[in-house]
Length: 404
Image 1 (cartoon, rainbow, N blue to C red):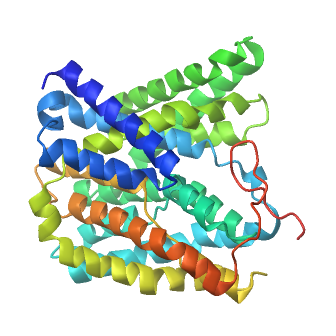
Image 2 (tube, helix red, strand yellow; image 1 turned 90 degrees about the vertical axis):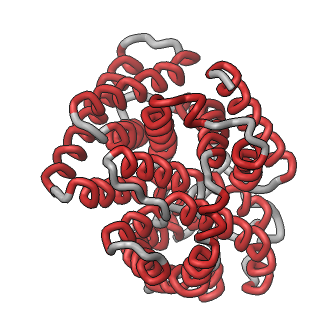
Image 3 (tube, rainbow, N blue to C red; image 1 turned 60 degrees about the vertical axis):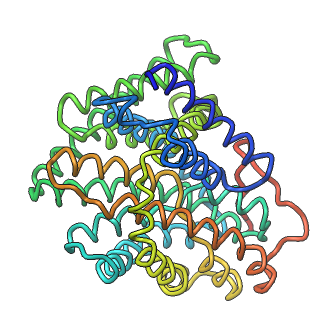
């Protein structure tokens, strides 16, 4: 298949998967994974390496950078208040640390890899993701503040986990902490400068409101490209910093930028996940199936409950709320996409990492299935299901409990 036909197929399948998933009220990642496998290794209609050639790695990496920009636009700390604040802060700090360390140990236990490579997998598995959590919460409908805690954990943890994973992968690949500091430093600098320029343009440049989204898209692409040009692998740091600064600055109003995720973000998620799942080796997926099942079992039954218990210790949450939080930690598109990006980087460095993609994709698929089927019964069992739908804010996120 030629380039034009490949792009058209990727976009068509990605959009169809997103539309169908919303109509069926299921996590889009499940349908996109199935559709990607179908058009890729099953039917052989799409071979991303053949279609995109040497451009595959930079295109995937840039798409991940744009997704992290979209995710970090949600990191508005003003929205994190009330009864959900302490639990969320615990989950994205102490919880992220315990998850990363625990997942590293679990990966090392089940896979024949070095501690460094196990740490890369463990860091990637820190992330959760609103693209999976959101649809599950819409179906489960837990009461407040459980819904807010889970929703905001998914929003905050994605850029945090991806940044940690990027740092760990850099250390494992280059074995030079200085390289990591240079990479992160240049990326953060470029992202902050780009954010400042964009804010000035929006505040003082009389930018039409209807063009702010495409302008932000251009700035995100530009920041990624400039950061990569200054220092290899700094682009992801730049786009994450750009989004986080825009979300928390108070100089210019940037409400239209939230449309980024509604339109461009959905298109990127669909296309990216189809491309990545089409590259999966079914033999590798089957070869690592048993270790992946073991990893998921410990993640779900042991690690997540421990993380929730430690992270929410001393909060005002009831035991039933804490139990429900301990039974909800699916992985999403950021975990899958960062795994694919890092796998390509390991291949490019001449150090293949064959376990990375099939194991992480397996974890994404299995956790979505496990929590999708058991989330509702668990909420009923713990008595945390709400009797009516909680009020949502303009971005479709739960309004936090402000009574405490």
